[in-house]
Amino acid sequence: MSRTLPLAVYGAAMTLLEPLAPSLLRARARRGKEDPGRTGERLGHASHARPAGPLVWLHGVSVGETTSLLPLISALLDRRPDLTLLVTSGTTTAADLLAARLPPGVIHQYVPADAPGPVLRFLDHWRPGLAIFVESELWPNLILAAHDRGVRLALLSARVTAASANRWARWPKSARALVTAFQLILPQDEGTARRLGELGATTGGRLNLKLIGEPLPFDSAELDRLRHGLAGRKVVLAASTHPGEEPLIANAVRKSAPEAVLILVPRHPERGSEIADMLGASLRSRGEALTAVHVADTLGELGLFMRLADVVVMGGSFVPGIGGHNPLEPARLGRPILTGRYAFNAQDVYADMFGAVCAIEARDGPALSRHVRGLLDNPAIARRMGDAALAFAARQGAALDQALVQLDPLLPA
Image (cartoon, rainbow, N blue to C red; front, side, top):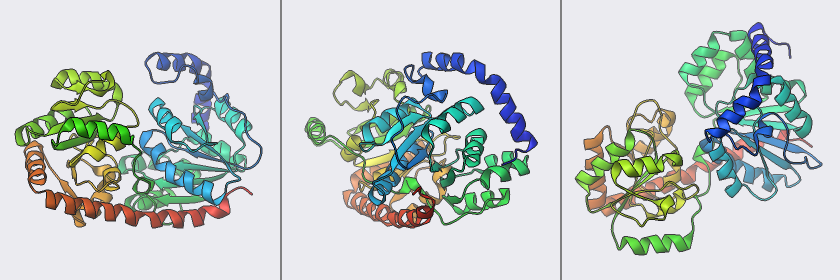
């Protein structure tokens, strides 16, 4: 595919910057942003041999995107057990999660930097027949180089914000070149479908992978131990919280439900000590017992704490700029859900959940206090909300079946 001038300039700039990549990666590793033992993968040097036979490559940048790939991975393995699946991600937290949750035989690598050298080394080694990107991962060198090599491309669960679409619209020919490189695009919602269409894409049906999946895993023995320690106390769980939210949620729960245990699960676990010190809370990573406020700063245990919860408060929605996080994780466990007013990333999902009366919006701290107290005081209403959430989650699976039918012609023989 011929490059437009902006794409050619971008490729040339990344080529010039490529010699700086090793030192930049080492600096990121010192800050905990890269795995120091695997920076070679970022430069396109594989740390795993390529198995013989057809290979499908799936990519998601961070924890949310890679987690959403898990049901698709399972479905592909069920339909085509002869396939080798390669999953790439961009963050260390996503890599840690995948190490624990990928099925046996599925390979994980870090995605290469979007520079010609790393990209070509990556493609030379892995030789995928199909590449599946999720959400908004539009890396020009990676996409166009794969397309030039005859790799079929699919963009699933696509999400393009208005701001992102406006940026791409400044270079309409370049945007068209990128989106038309995909043989299949399945947007999450109508807004994304419209924006992609304006950039030149042809889209198929709707698919939001974050709405599909199995309940989060948990350790049953640890669940029994924690329940025994709670001694019947109610639990409010705040999941995937961000800076500025923990004090707001803690104050709301302390005012309305001082008898309850508040468990805070920060989106970025490395913030755990900071939050615990700020709120005078106990900390999971130190092995401390549950107290009135407890910070769960360990990876892979959200399913455990959601099962303890009487009410789940979804983080990322009480401060501007984050956009909220996936409410289907508590919904799959039949938990009543509270969200703030800034959940624009899941706007359509929450609209449906509000209509099904399985989630409630709390616009500020006082509203959050009222709703927490109301759900704890009325367990029958909380149960009805949880049952409605469970039913809503169960209805989402049909979209994956439809997507697999559309993917079938793109799978390598």
